[in-house]
Image 1 (tube, rainbow, N blue to C red):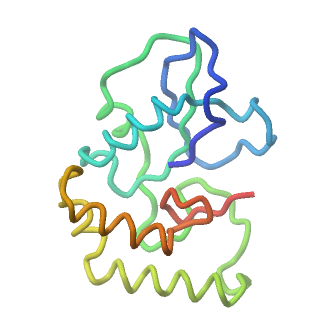
Image 2: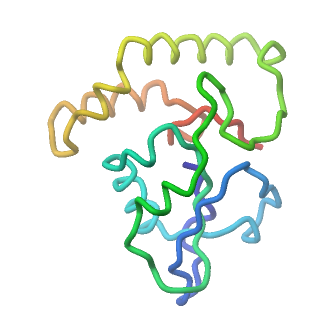
Length: 156
């Protein structure tokens, strides 16, 4: 998930919009906004929705009422290509062989961790479980992207 700018929503911006392709690069509020409350709700809902698995998206809010049908929002998204580093529709901005060696090393480590079922185990752990905190602490030590939000998409 790639959220818009936090907490700059207008009072009537409640409709969630999920986009793909990471095309908004203005670096200002025109890229889109999202309330932290909305971001948290989508994060939690994505953990329990099979329709959200394997999908990278940008999350913003626009004018309109909130929708409670999260599965419909996730279903409308295209899945990421299996084994791809970038999300579906992302621009090809840096071939893997041109990435710095530390980035390639980190990606190899993540792939190894995922191949051992780390993500499967994490997904199966209830949010109120003490085991969740252990996995979360591991993830904070070595997050999946520079923002620590997961996903392997590149950010400007």
